Image (cartoon, rainbow, N blue to C red; front, side, top):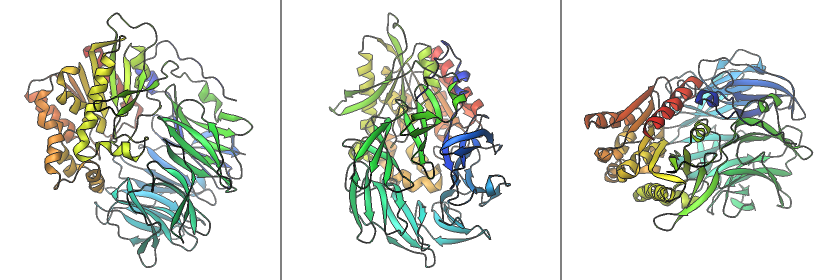
Length: 607
């Protein structure tokens, strides 16, 4: 049964909310006796370990890494208890791969080129080899490497032509690759022969497709594939690599399936279905196609998902607007239960469950948004409003936990989080609705929603602010330059201000992928210039807070500092918070507190 979470104190500081621990990213040993997972209980994501029995914790947790940098991911070997984990430095996304032998050994680096990216791929079935991608040869391109763990010798088995990653070893030694050289939403599956370096199409297709998950059959002649090949939204299919065909097994009309895991007996698959930014699990009987809705621990999001080896019990990450991320289990007998009862005793925000609503935008398109309303009666003039715009651009605001939202609500600020056109989660057509020359239509969605919210009787139309991070930072700057009179203030968190310089300075391995999203820097040079807020920065009159970190590999700090220099030159009100040794986000608790507290202070002063 689910245990009710305690009600949060009436008033908590921003640091109190940020300090709420989060856990997730679990990986289970092949025999199911141990679970490794990531937790920021120490202030920075590290690996924790717990003994398990029948998919349930059977002993105390213990922290097994104490690094000065975050751990990004962890994966047990398919045999034994060896662990692979990845790290970076200052969130620079130049990932390095490490091995811990038997969960107790001294960590050993498998990669040492600190200025290059190493993307973890997969273990061989016998756990003697690993495959990963790296841009060591050319910073713009990802090659495929295979390492023998007995000798630690590695071979470059394929020279890539863009972004590519290994997904699985076949029993005959071939590697299944996901090739994303065109874009992350236009992918190919390839079979690579490591001996010859020759890659051939595994599943030819016409038109763009993405492959979110591939679960190989033991003989590698087929697989369970989660893909939108031939349809608008990802669905579960059976792939026959010999016949090169796809047979649909399960789809949810109007919604995307985000994740799938195969049961140990291979008779069923657990699918994570995204319904308007709230995620649920459906169990699919692979023989009949019958789906059973298991639900979720609440209205929230599900991250990593796995079956405990040898059982029908699921292990999952779950977070919601009222609770930080934690590890949960599901079984037919018990339903959803927390894995660690002590986490449930910690205070959580219990007063910020949003409504998911829609409005008709400027051209009649229905645009969804999340509405978080403060408790109590609105003031006579109405609630002040903060718009929070997600990044991406091909991302989605979901019912996740954010430490700043309960604090804003606690201080009487309504929060609106839109999923403007171009957001993922609503199918390929909706996601593509802001491509290239339609980029500014998404900005018009934001402005139209602002007017829709301003017309409510419980809001103060004179006190509406806009904030966003990454692409959401671009949306913030664009909204403030397109409709400067409509915003009381704005907050640009590592946002894009100048697309031409972004394309020159972003991580070289990301440039092709960014061109697919925003436009080619040569062919579409004029479009990129026109949509760049820096070209109209003199139109910003309202106070602006800029937050950027020094090691950001995606949106380099020059993007924020261009805006800072321009606004200072124009003698416009602008504040700037520069965070050292962080990247495209903030991994350290102290930095998160600093950023969110600075934002809260800025809003208290200007909103």
